Image (tube, rainbow, N blue to C red; front, side):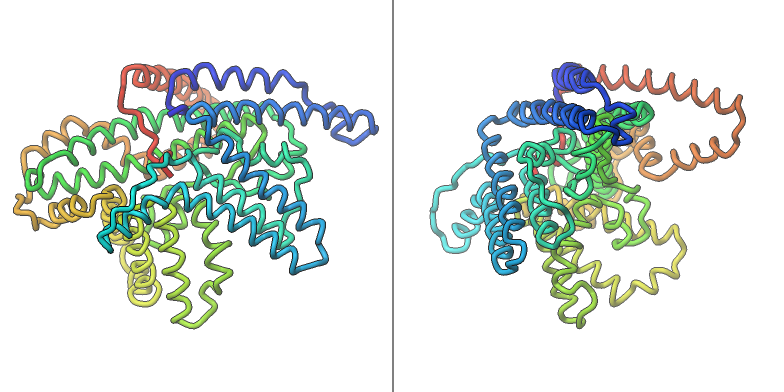
Length: 493
């Protein structure tokens, strides 16, 4: 993929930023709004910045599969035109609803066609013994993300929560911004509306953005990829060959890989956003530190959870309805959440798995769980999450069943094997680093140092941090050059 390539990291980004920063910032007089001519110049500078960002975003998206660029252009034209028409007939509620429905129908139809057509055909063939030929369509990169962004704009505009965007190029810039285009976070128009039209790039935020980007790069290359290699070795073991301990080690490794892989992309996207003057929403808040399934989903892929909450769950009535309707709302949301992640039955099963567990927490054992010791609550949540990600990773239901049997010692395998010690010995360092960084240890240490307010301690910490960043960057670069295993797991969504 484009984002994981050396040309992108060492050519595309620097050129983009050099051109972007070549456009001068607005003057102090412009910030104060003195003079129409100065305001016009400021508007032109902003238009140039958006133009440069748009150009490089389109190049970035077209790099992987140029033909799908036209699909994104069509989707943005649909929602932009729908928004203008909704505004034109502002007093006519019925017409506004028609334009909204048309926009949503077109967006969902595109998503369904490219992402779920073969899944539906395969299901029909399996149920009825037909032999309908699969379409074999390639999945447009990031279609689930940018489709949800365009739909959120149309819905928020219909609700009167955002102003209409009258400039199509600005709207296209919002949807196609390369930092978050292919794997989120899902950025709503309301979040970047002001910055899209009036933003200043601050030196401090550029510095912090560079550091945030590098943190994501380190998490991706030095942790996610290395732990992912462990998972790939364990998943390829023959049924019954892996002991129970090894099966659980593999499942834990995939959980850590997915967390660091996806959160790393979010870190890089947020960091690049800061460098460009945008503030994207946080997408992760140490989800493996959760004390319940409910808490986990407040911390994991926050932009997606909040999207389903605001546009599906609450409109259906949320939890302010009868128990039966609330159960309906929960299962609708979690069925769709699973389906959003992929066109396979394991994703549907994964979504329903969480729907059932969240329902049980709400109505059966939630209050009892709150009385347990925190350590037990953490263990409870982690076991559920690890099992859940085993369901997530296997699209072959037979392989899924076999692996779950291995974890439950129902596949004729031993509880313990020497291979587990071998894997732990070879990957122990990266596993330890992953486990430590998956918990809020770094913010805690940083907070302790900041509270000391000792100039010597602060200077020493700053020097150590600088040396650490340089060494980690060199290590990440070396791994990027030498490693062939460098996937971004959420690109397929």
